[in-house]
Each structure stands twice: as C-alpha cells, then as structure tokens.
Image (cartoon, rainbow, N blue to C red):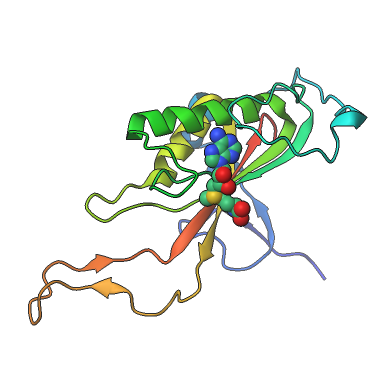
Length: 192
Ligand SMILES: C[S@@+](CC[C@H](N)C(=O)[O-])C[C@H]1O[C@@H](n2cnc3c(N)ncnc32)[C@H](O)[C@@H]1O
C-alpha cells in the first residue's frame, strides 16, 4: 500500500502520514526565529561522568554545581522553589527570583551534554497580579541558548471541575479562571 503524504496546510495535518514540511521551514517566520534562538553546540563533545560522582546526592544549592564536569549530564529534572513562602523559600523580589533561577539554568546548561534535556515543572502564580512565570522562564532559557522542545500540561487532580469566579451574583462581569494545571517545560542543549 502506498503511504499518504502531505505538505503543511493552513490547518495542519489531521492524521499521521509522511509529511513534507519544506514549505513550512522555508518561511521567514521560522528562519528569523532560528536566527535569534537556535543555538547549536556542534563543536562540543560529551564528557563521561567520573565513576565517583555516580549515584551521589549533593545537599547544596543548585546555583553552584562545581563537582559536576561540563557536558556530562543527560537529563535534568526540577521543580524549583516557587518563592511563595514555603519552608524552603527565601523572600526574593521578582527580579531576584528570576536571577536566582537564571543562575541555576546557566549551571544546568554547563553540565548538560549536547542534546541533553532539561525539564522544568512550574505553575503560574497569583491572581492579582497573575504571574505567568512559565513565560519568563521560557524566555530566560531561550536567551541562555537552550532549544525549546515542547511543553507538557500537567492537569492536576480536580481538573475539569468548574473552577471559575464570575464576579458578583447576577453580574458576571469579571470571570476569573483558576489554573488547574502546571507546566513541564522541555528544553535541550545545543542539538535536536
Ligand atoms: C517545589 S519543591 C519541589 C519538591 C520536589 N518535587 C519533591 O517532591 O520533593 C522545591 C524544592 O527545591 C529545593 N530548593 C530550594 N532552593 C534550592 C536551591 N538553591 N538549590 C536546589 N534546590 C533548592 C527545596 O528544598 C524544595 O525541596
């Protein structure tokens, strides 16, 4: 049987078929994004993690991971502190918090092998204001040179139940949606 093939349509493809995406990738939209955010590390090679460092837990801040050599880790998964007053949180301003996470992302970039993955579990915070934290973290990761590979929406227990505040009774003029999900943002270093 002959395999069906498609090229990118204005509505995307509705079924899994071989796909000629050349027209899509030839668009200025893609090339200009790639020029700004498509960092590659083709010249970097992977380093084998020394045996003595395997299966070790370092009880310290991830801001400094000097024990770990450059280009030696395949996967980083984190759920960072949210800076909302939990036992382990410090009271950082928004800028300080972003810089703190940025220091960790920089270390993560250093230790990952080319093509290594970084997975960041985050929720957006607050109502007034609502802080779209994931958008800032994506921006910071792209600026450090990570390639974004996708995001997983983690629908929390209770997702799908109505969780909306409508304003005053009989006057639904200020509907507010409560998030019932978190994000797991997926990045890689340097290569696809
Ligand atoms: C949102 S919680 C994640 C909890 C984790 N998913 C678990 O189930 O244990 C954030 C964690 O980050 C840790 N943490 C806070 N500051 C840190 C830092 N500078 N470096 C590494 N971990 C840190 C906290 O101790 C806390 O365990």
